[in-house]
Image 1: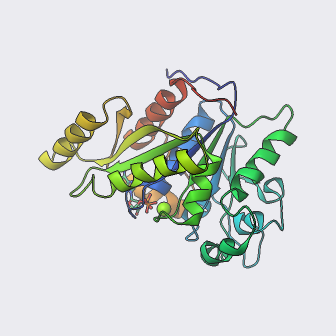
Image 2: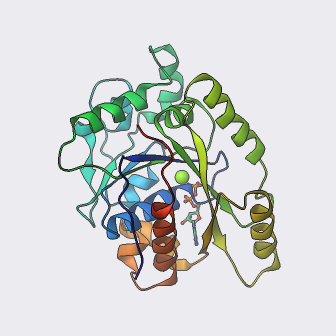
Length: 272
Ligand code: ADP
Ligand code: MG
């Protein structure tokens, strides 16, 4: 059986890659569900206007219903918009909102525009008592705009999912440069803590080559566990479930459980 370690302080992890379709949302949802299955209390924040993480967790984004947009503009607290996922009481979701699409622009004129998510999370964690959240996973949109900057300011860790495909490393140096910029200007604690290889297909040379190349450059950061390409993983969201709930015995679920265990056992280097 897999080992999980509850962190001493809440670990806030930004799941980021400015490329779309690399498995960010799938990873935020399934790692979150896996950590919850491992006994952790987990909050998934859906920072993508598409709202895919919310619906994959069985959470409806209602027209005008309060979500992360209302939190960012200061109309609601995070506590007021958090809802339990459909599958596990330890797995919570701060849903996206339809209006989030405009936030990238609207935020520009607000005070402390880069710190709004940090403020909201900080307040939530300050108010907590016995029901402490162990992990906050932030599902980022596919860009390095102000929403992602908010995630980088709020988090101590960045987890980058990399799809085992052509051009896997494209854009990675820009992403790493942005982490350094954020270190200089906004959040010295932010660091790349994990790379997760996704959609691995052991039958192709290409997958193998990409995995080898990533490990060559990022041996320390890259998780041992790779997520295989499986139909079950791609089907689960249409049932409003993680693959952990949808296909518990399958290899997709198992791989996310293993990745979650690995992540939870990694040292926390930063204290909030
Ligand atoms: P992103 O959030 O980076 O845009 P998604 O998590 O939405 O990426 O994944 C893109 C697509 O790939 C989705 O249709 C998703 O269901 C599918 N997908 C992601 N991971 C896997 C996997 N391991 N096996 C099969 N399909 C996957
Ligand atoms: Mg996504």
